[in-house]
Length: 286
Image 1 (spheres, rainbow, N blue to C red):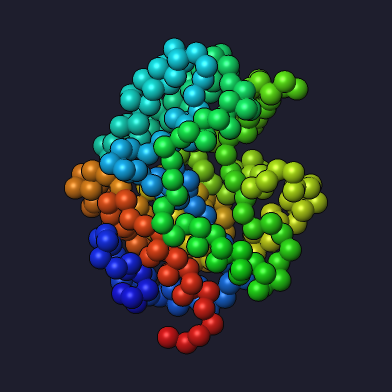
Image 2 (tube, helix red, strand yellow):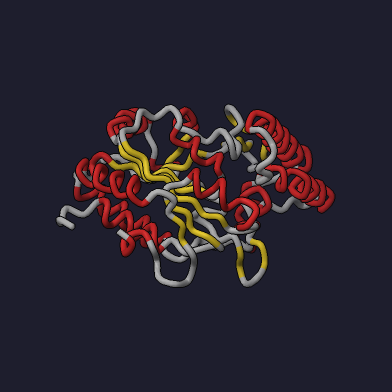
């Protein structure tokens, strides 16, 4: 088992209950690839926390508005709310309200200060954001598995806040309920969209929702204890949770190691998860 979940010596990995983890691995392998789905957070999970010694940008910080005053206002919100997001002393219900405040104020500033579709594309091109090593290979593995189990639905979907633009490409509003760090769960699947919107169709989305309900084994990836709630609303049989504790390790190690089945420390790569996912879907005996 150690060879499965530990990725070399580049980072430390913590498994609080190896026996329980092994039981979960065996159960998921017994179910096979057709019953497995991967639920992953984006910022700080699929993406690197540190890039060339500097803090990588999150999704909200990537967007730069033409009026620098609004960028400054959003940065101040980040500086106030981000430490609260990871403060282990704040009760979950109180923290949820704080995150709703943060996202709501940020969205309001984006609308008030103005954002265009082309402006977002330019911001992303210049952004300090990068995927962890191994993420591309993990997505490729999942695509291959989709083909092997003969599923026709599009297997990568994005659950996120949805922007509404006018005919001139200017941001007008946000569609639906606000999704923030503490309410990303299976109920948010109604807000999900394919990786490329133009490939979507209503019938295909309905078929996929039904298919996802049949995938009752879960590999969940996150960098926040709140990310464990991403599987809420899903009647899963077995879930393996993998956490990334990227910073302030000493402050949060104890609560994170109890919360996640596997915990990677210090901005680790995704190679360990790739090895685990490969093993979970392998038909070969141990």
